[in-house]
Image (cartoon, rainbow, N blue to C red; front, side, top):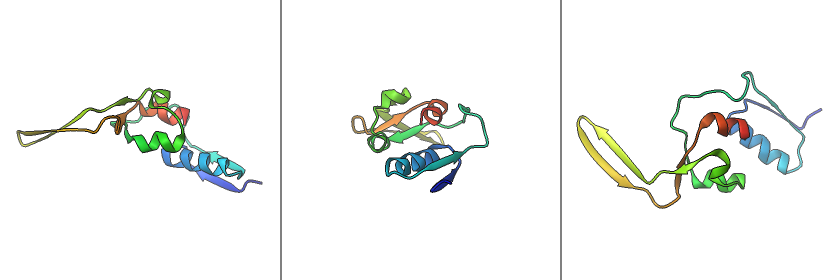
Length: 98
């Protein structure tokens, strides 16, 4: 018998399971796909994600984003990002390690 059953081992499900287990609950995670799986996305996340998980971005092969460029109808605008506030990572590794 489990206290909680989490369906889906993506970032939300795996994080929820991790936090619940850290609080002493007996958790079962059910995922329909085999991990690691490839997911098409930019893999962007904030520094806060790593603080919540109590790990370094390097644990997930993450590296900081320094600038963001927005292009729309030929117009370009570039923005600086505060140091170590946003990271990009490989989602398949993130999902698997999480």
